Amino acid sequence: MRILITGITGRIGANLATQLVERGHQLRGLVWPRDPRVENLKKMQIELVKGSLTDPAAVEQAVDGVEAVYHLGAAFQGGGPFTDEEFFEINVRGTFNMLEAVRRVKRVGQFLFASSDAIYDKYVPGGMSVPIDEQTPRQPKGAYALT
Image 1: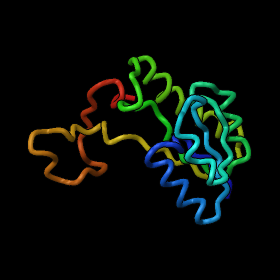
Image 2: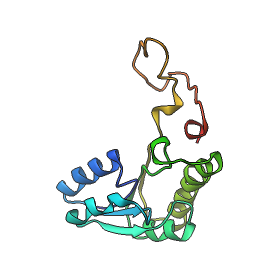
Image 3: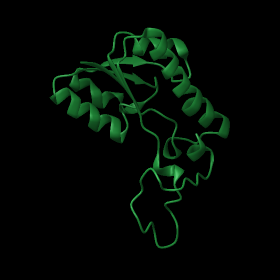
Image 4: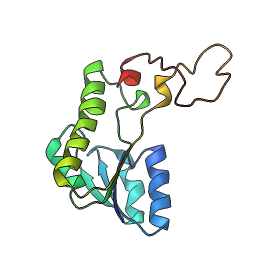
C-alpha cells in the first residue's frame, strides 16, 4: 500500500515508518524543508516531499497517489518557539489542508489523525489517578493544546 506520513521525522512518525517499511509498504513523507532529521530517513528508501502543511499545493502533491494518510505532523511545544498564530496556522489550517487534499484526490481510503495528550491536564499534583480514555475531561492549556 502507498502511504503518506506527515510528521515522519518525529518520534511516532519515524517509528511508524520503520514498522510500515518492514511490512512492505511504500512510504511517502511530507517533510518541512529545514528539518535536520530528514537525513535519518534516506536509508529507508522513503519518497520525500518537501513542503509545509500550510501550503495547499505541497499538501496536495504529497497526497496525490497514496491510498492512506497518517497525519501526525504538527507544530509542537518542543519544536518552537511558535507564536499562537503559528500554532493555529500549522496545526489547524494544516489539518484542514490535509483533509481538503484528501477530499479532492478521492483515492485515499484511510485517514488517521493523531492529536496530542496535551489536551488533558496530565500535570496535576500527584499525577493522573486513572488511565486517559475518551471520557477523560479535556483541559487544554495554551495554544499548542488548543490546536
